[in-house]
Length: 252
Image (cartoon, rainbow, N blue to C red; front, top):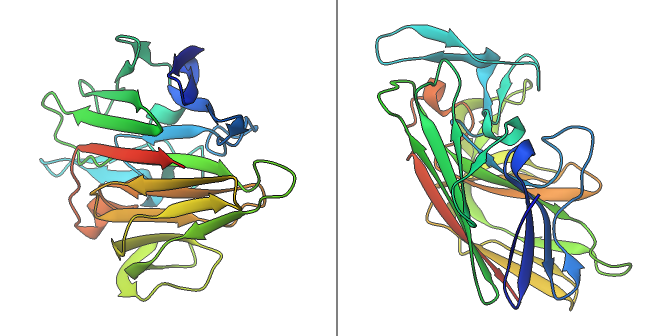
């Protein structure tokens, strides 16, 4: 376990399990959903070299060759990349690196966590090193619905449109206005920075210039607000995404 702290915030990073944030404490409150059996269901983790699901785990490189990605985490689709379940290497006190396996080798990824006052800056970069497979990246923070016995989480999130989700939970490529909650949906054209509020105890504002966000509200214990450079199944939808992402998490 790796610890990063300043006068406001203390992070614990589980280097062996995705270099994920396993704990984030601000003014005595915990803002990370704690460990559960499924490594996709807790902590704050990076999604790389793809974010979200890839349909049936099939992806095509620049030469037209189709590669099969692992689908055992969420059959029959490939889910969230390799980063969330892999052991990363610490570069320095704030930064971590992972060499990706085939078919993405020799690509590498790096992520860093920087604390300034009441703000966490989380950054992630994919470096292809000649790999021609499509890549896009994102963050997957799990926020607890309660941080004390009284304050229930409220989400402030608005977007111009969403990708239509099929019965297989994959985007169809069509667009609609935001559906009714609960959500497991990809949105674009957000209106202002999303924020999460726990009564009068705490508020987190999330600021990022990415074009896509996935919001998941189907879990009883937590919700996810996920900035991404492209939506789930982006390569098969013909949507390209940036290889780097940065987001600010501002506590008040």
